Length: 295
Image 1 (cartoon, one colour):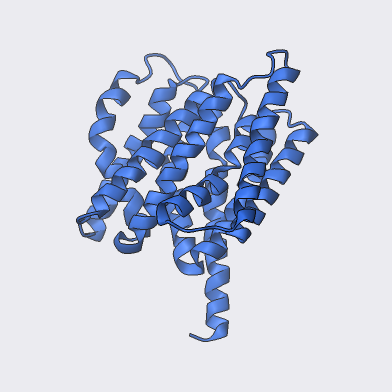
Image 2 (cartoon, helix red, strand yellow):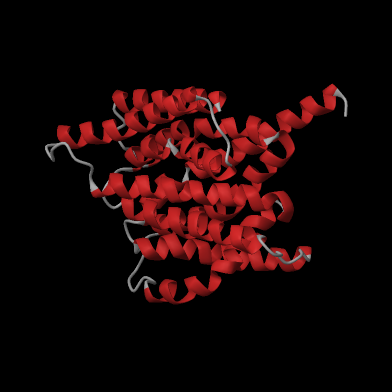
């Protein structure tokens, strides 16, 4: 392959990756819109149910092969982390914190993914990697504590902060598991099969938490976004970018996600984003970038 072709594929991969990140960045603001009128359990599990139905249709149309052997185990990790864990805990967190505050904590997801991937793969990163990891995590937790004290609640993490940190940790597990199984199963096939696997776990809770009252069009719009974009199409663009442009290079695009999320929260939800929150987000992005470079 010529250098020009490699460059073209690299830019194409960056473009697909950026498209996926923009889609993911809208998840928290759109969930905040939906949670006003809809049960948080219905949102977090219902969006997976919608995406699972679409996945079945796509897999049948494409005649994709069934997963084999250890692929089922890695897919279970995707179900736990990406299909169930992150949506559930992040949606519950948004009952207590604003979308912009959750976006700052979510800024550690790329770093958490890198740390977990290093541990599962048995790699031995340099000391600088762990230094930036600790510093980035400390910034996020320290900011959450400072905001809690500033609001009069004392120097402690709120329920929303804790739930969002839990969402980040379990979401990183789903990313690592998905990255492993995608090597053999395929990129978009990975999220589709994970959604299909989760289908039996979704039917009863979604039906039980379905809305019993009139729901605003805005809330349904937020639910439609997280179902079609955040849980389905966004992963198509993201994994396509990783496949075309390379995981290491395109993965850096995810560092921009906190900025997109904060911008959307300010524009769509009219949330006040204080300057210190932008500074913290920038500092976290710098720590993540330097940490990944050190790895």
